[in-house]
Image (cartoon, rainbow, N blue to C red):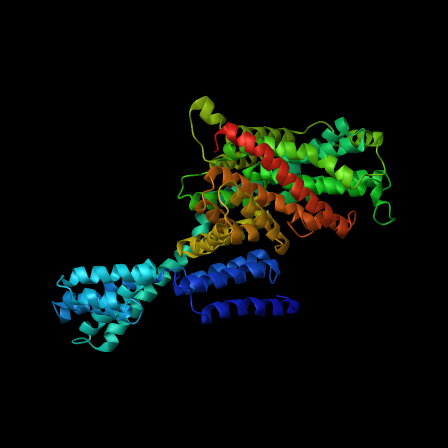
Length: 597
């Protein structure tokens, strides 16, 4: 780690310390509150780039495995009760009555110490059985506090009572060792299981395999050929080149889950080459001739195409996973459902975007007959489509058809999207388009596997520990206070989620940290689940338009020097507004037709 990053690391550690020394809210267990602190520290470490993303996430995995912090305290107490019960039973066969009496006394004393003293004494003086009295006191305590706190009081009292009975015969050290062993064994087994749980997520492997398959598109030159082909057709005017870029983005998006690779590695070099052909360079101050406009179109096409397919950018499968968890698996968005749902909204936004950018940052050069000739010359250099390109094109087409559900329509077979991606990878390997050594060398894919698995794991654990429900309840209270509900709450929460991205340098970190909370809050306030999911996933991609650090593609294109910082942020904000209005407006009609709400 660089020395300059040490203050950032200390800041992240300070966040963890704060969460460990401050008491947990009433509705959260202490370990859940502590885990939230670790989660926030990890997200901050990602944003502040304390270490590479993969390194931060590997450390997070190690922390979860070593600490066992994701083990619910309720599960620990249950394990301790189970472990110490045999000792208590051997010490006194009538141990159950003593435990029940202790639980009754604990609830009575807790209520007497509160403002429920009168009710507690009335119940105590009644002629009901001990079990009935205890149940009544439990109900009052639960109503005054929470179900979690009531269960915790009952469990802790049970453990204390069982331990007391056991120590009447057994040494205190033996009883304490029994409790500690039960706790440590459970935390050890749960910790490693939870830490590695993200690696079994099929959606993560969908992205990993798709990134590897996309390497074939780049290696064979198929992506470059398609881009030059569109420019050779539409490149007579500058606006035509812009639409060629947009079309290339849309065509390549389904099989290039790295939006940075798509816009930065495939299309950006072509854009720069065209700009320099027209003597438009930042070095001599002529970038406004055509380079600025084409660079802006290159970038602004990226968020729109990313929104159109699950496999168009890495965080999209995370959205699918979080939506499924928030709805208890009632809504599991498929590849085809996402693509169909975002088809018209995406195409409408993509069709309008070059015109909006043209108005905001008009190029000096309007006619570009040389661009068509340039593209044709590049196609001539590439020559006839080679064997590997034909194979990649066939695999490309096959993946699109199968992801769209062709196997079900033709053969009545249902295939998982990840299974389909693995089939594509198999064909690419068997045909020799990619070698296994090239797959091993695809660092982006394996890096994605590590950080994606860690962030999915941590987001899942937030739900398991009740943290997301706690945070969503806070948002729900705000929405209720503002009198929001239905459609208004969906817009309010999605817009707040979108513009919070000014504080994030990673779409993945942003979605991991905030998507589940905002989505759950909307559901609690009555938002239609599937409709709201599509509004939120739209916002989750549109937010990439905003800044020069909004996603991995941004610094690549901004770094070319064709667009000033002020223009980048100004046009980014305008496009975020335009994209949301266009995509949601078209979407509301289209999603109604599709029966999403």
